[in-house]
Amino acid sequence: MSYSNGKVARNLKVERVKRGWSQERLAEASGVGQNSIARYETGATTPGLDQAFKLAEAMGISIDAIVGWQPPEETGEDGAA
Image (tube, rainbow, N blue to C red):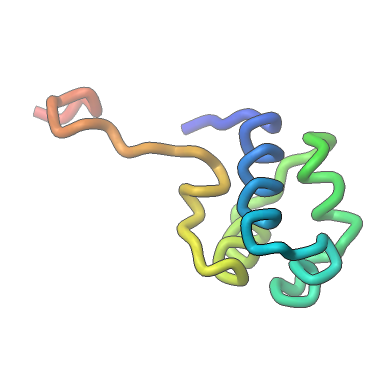
């Protein structure tokens, strides 16, 4: 699975803003540095899996909401027989 920095950046910021949180508030809640969050939201860098889980957990959302992954429909699109 791959995902783009732009999608992660947009989704992370949208989820944070929906809650009315500052980057500093998200940093405190997640244990992820505020500077890292700023870099994630600009697309300068992408969070690793551990950081993405911390951010998602702090906001009470699925990691899928951050990375923008959607499971394949149950029509065999995943290649399973």
